[in-house]
Image (cartoon, rainbow, N blue to C red):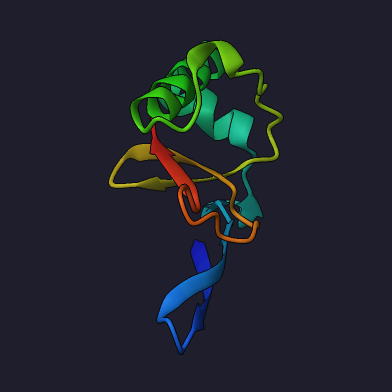
Length: 108
């Protein structure tokens, strides 16, 4: 389940704040499933490395950050979801919208 909340300034018709929350539920057990469990099953044992590489690739490609500046380590608390069989990880999900970058949704 992906819930997106946006506050829009009516005068300028721009998004002022945006928040994304995700809930990943195992339908058999009806319990929420953690990032590490899903990522390991979909991406394999090296999921942390793969997520880091794809995140760096995205940030460099979008000119958000230089590769040598990247120091973030996956915490397991990040919002994520699966859409059409693809794993997505979401950053800046509850921040004031940065006019240049906004919410970052990376398909792994």
